[in-house]
Structures are given as C-alpha cells and as structure tokens.
Amino acid sequence: MSEKKKGLVGFGSTVTIRKKGHKEDHTYTIVGSEEADMRNHKISHLSPLGEAMMGKKKSDTFTFSTPSGRQEYTVVDIG
Image (cartoon, rainbow, N blue to C red; front, side, top):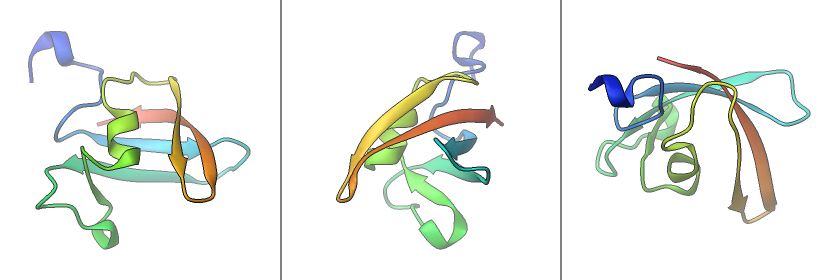
C-alpha cells in the first residue's frame, strides 16, 4: 500500500463502520467480487456498500442506497 493511500479505504482494507443511530459496529474486508462472502464479512469493492466506502477516511460519513432506502454510516476504523 502506498503512502498516498494510507488511511483511506481501498482494496484489501478491513473497515469498521457504524450505522447512524446505532451503537454496534460492523467490520468488513474489501475484496474482489469473486472473493466476496458476506458470511465471512468480505464484501466486494463493486457492491453498493463497498463502493460507497472506497476512498473514505476514518470518521468520514457516507450514504448508499438499499432496497429499504438510503443508509448512512460512519467509518469507525480502517485496518
């Protein structure tokens, strides 16, 4: 990972996020579409959630659309 990308969500990042208004955190690893496996918390960088997280920094807030409407999350940590 280059210094330029350090601290940003990218391919291979493990990202902890929190949904607005909720207390529990969720951690996902950003992977390629063929490696995606929600049971193991691996999401594709091309999925709506994965795509919305790409390029974000710790404490950034982001939104994305789901069948039940727009969801707002905050990046808690990036590993």
